[in-house]
Image (cartoon, rainbow, N blue to C red; front, side):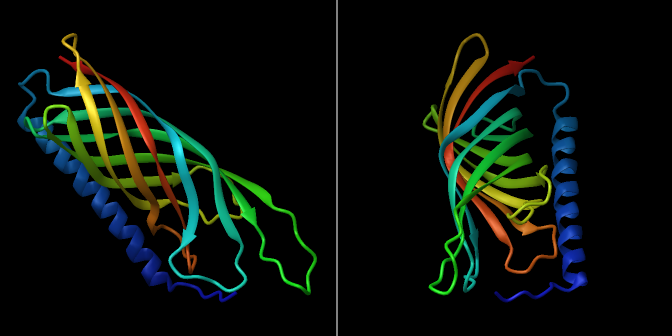
Length: 218
């Protein structure tokens, strides 16, 4: 297996880029809030749950002799906030906790004894910042950035702290009482820009269904 170190200057640039994007997003959200603070019924807060899909660990470059990684199960719980910009656009953020189980299958050869498969478990804390485009009254498309923090101790999977991305398509229903329920099939790529110096970095790719219950704030 080839192992080369990424120069420190490149690692520092990735960290600065991530901090700059995070600063820009939150300044933009604060500005939008300040411009509309006199208005009512502009936000929704609620809980979300994600699962029922696939989670795999991949590299963008194949390595000879590397193990294979197959997702076993995962789940995500979140507290999310939805801010209405206009009738068609919403901004969504929040904080989410996810747990992942991955089965690792070591590479076997004729000259070596067969090593058994083993399990890797790790947790992430995600801060999504996404834009939701509403259409046809009950449908929406959402996508944006994920700010990931790997909450696990060191293990066989590269740390997933970094900036990722998410894209999805969903349906929703608004009740007259101010509550909203939605279902949101999605795809996520974690640690697309990792905050680590590992070369050939592993990235968690996740697809599943997200369900949410939101309530309108007055």
